[in-house]
Length: 334
Image 1 (cartoon, rainbow, N blue to C red):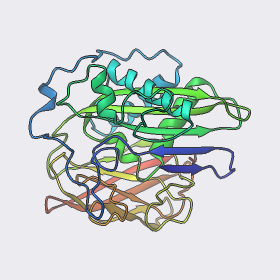
Image 2 (cartoon, rainbow, N blue to C red; image 1 turned 180 degrees about the horizontal axis):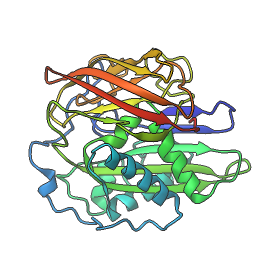
Image 3 (tube, rainbow, N blue to C red; image 1 turned 90 degrees about the vertical axis):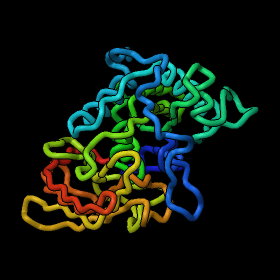
Image 4 (cartoon, rainbow, N blue to C red; image 1 turned 180 degrees about the vertical axis):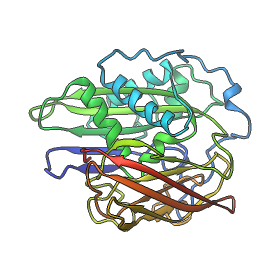
């Protein structure tokens, strides 16, 4: 479970990495070891498997929390060359059932426990399969809850969900995993003065190849704007942090790749260099990072509304790469 507190201590956000490819959100980690490849065989092309519930265009109502989160995540994926995800009704239904389970029981968990209110299935894969999802196609989830001490519009709730994940070093990579299908549900339960928000994001149908071997994708990328400049807290805490930290830089290879980060830095408008902490499956003390992914982050918050030049050096399957690009923070801290 991951928890966030805002600087004003006005909200509590909890996130659970459970999408299945690395952490509980992508590849189930084995204690004491770097994450393995995804459970099951992904040697075949899952994109060739017909998946029921796939929609040609999003059906989330305009102005809804789900629509706002879906569009923001997909916009950022498209901007940086990641495959666009499509809405899937089965994953939407699975997300709603799991969000309801968490709200009913006031518990954040990837897995459900039989006997508790609204129990439907233990794992994300099991829940999706009960609704008609193919058993040989991957399905997983990310889950989140937060409380705000003022009223929000539905769209603002959705943006809080998306930006909260984007600001977190361990969670941001899960939004850019090589997945094709997507589902989301955001439900409410009674809070002190305003509702407690429970969100479940489901993804599935692995894409084996998203880029050339020597050209890993990044998020942010050249020209990305409006990112949170700080995350106040994350559990488990990203290595080296003691409280708030800066915008995470996600680096993503193909599913079968082994990606290692060597160094990363930001250069601010005054020309000052900010050394970033680099994290991948080889040096992650919590064993949550996927082998094909890495993340770099400043150990203190960045400045709001500021343009930074990013330089990232690393290796994919032993071959060196360098990425250099500019991005801008916004005025939001998570």
